[in-house]
Amino acid sequence: MAAAVVQPLSALLDANAAAITTAAAKGISPSVGGTGMTAAASNPFSGFGGSSLFGKPAAAAPAPASAPGTAVSASQWLAHAHTDAASKALAHQHVKLHRFLQVAGYGAETKPYVRARISELARGHCLGEYKWDSGGTGWREKLPTDAEVFVHLFKVSRSPRPCTTHSHTRCTTKRAPSTPRSHPHSLFADVPRLRGGA
Image (cartoon, rainbow, N blue to C red; front, top):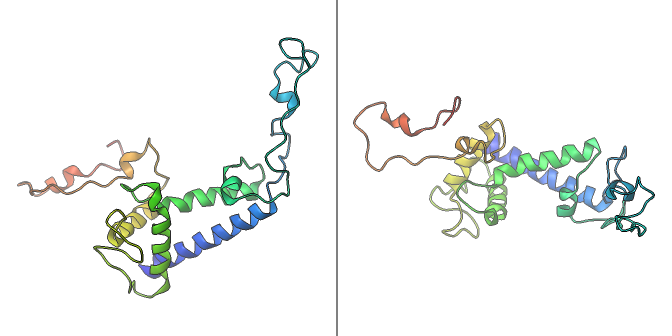
């Protein structure tokens, strides 16, 4: 499991973070092909003599938060609507990789722990640091256990698309009933069907 899932995932997360940091340090590239909003496009009255509704000249559009080539933070770079193919691909890869960090049933505040735990488990061989009922450095009750992290990694690696509110039934797990049922095939009655609805 370490060689098949955890080590490649850790390497991809590291490479993506490094590429985004490098791209953010270069700044945001200007929009290509006129897809960005200009002062004329943002003023609906610009085709009528350039004045506003009350006859005053329209104010110029505010300058962008950062000029092209000015370094921005990684979060600013990711929030930008990129127009070039390389930046779009990098941002898309970031979204796909970060699905692995959001364990179902836990808040976004657990992502840094999950990322660090994936790195810890990827360092060794045969998952020597794995603890099924707890976790690694900094683990506490409100964080996912290694078992929960691995089930999540497996589910996300097998999921054909990201979890959204529309596909929520595909991305949640159901707990086993507290008492077994008498029918031998009833165990599968609580599992949602993958195709044709929940």
